[in-house]
Amino acid sequence: MALIELIRVAKVYRMGDVEVHALREVSFSVAERDFVAVMGSSGSGKSTLMNIIGCLDRPTSGTYRLDDQEVSRLDRRALARIRNRTLGFVFQSFNLLARTSALENVELPLMYAGVPARERRRRAAEALRRVGLAERAHHHPNQMSGGQQQRVAVARALVSQPRLIVADEPTGNLDSRTTVEIMVLFQELAAAGITVLLVTHEPDVAAYASRVVVMRDGRIRSDERQAARQAAADLAAAPPLEETAPREASA
Image (cartoon, rainbow, N blue to C red; front, side):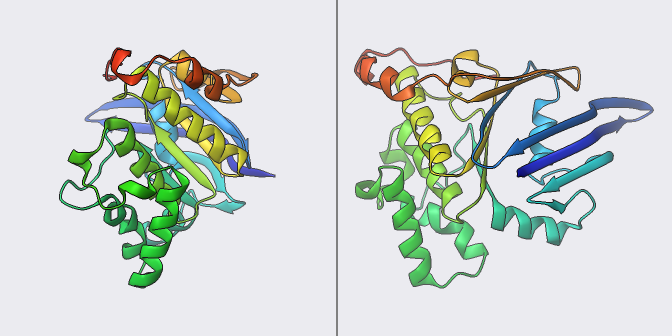
């Protein structure tokens, strides 16, 4: 069964008298438990596609079904409920609150959802344990490495028990070894039954997904299955962190 289904979805932005066609009748579906990487250069439409799938934007035309529910025309409140219940987000810049602990950062989505404090704390601690940061629960972001901060961000995405995680360039600010650590984590989440949609411009990152979609000029140009690269083997072979050159942050 498809968790995500887009049928002839178009997105047009108006800039004065000029129309910008960000998506041009894209049809696209993702099954549950799949790990999909969406690639494309700046202006290809990949970020617009991610925003629509993540219920952060609406299509101009076409149909979008998420978990068999038509969401294209829902109002803001209904979209917010779906985001909170079904989706988890991971971004390049981590988006952690600097003056709060890892545990408190992870609790935030549950706080907004009205979950009682004791249950929030329990679920946040479990999410941190799941990403290997149980012992860092009371550390603040400035006391953690970039990779640890991104793991906190993944734990925050997991705490609402989503069926879909949308990750936007999640390794762009990480060194090469830490990138592999995060890709190991995404592969583990997909194997555990969570659908993962990863937006990236880096072929070496997309190689860890089981399916790669390439976009150009608002259209899908290729959509192929692949044998996913084994991140765990890459991690075992990688040099120690201090010997690994930092990755360049994406533009």
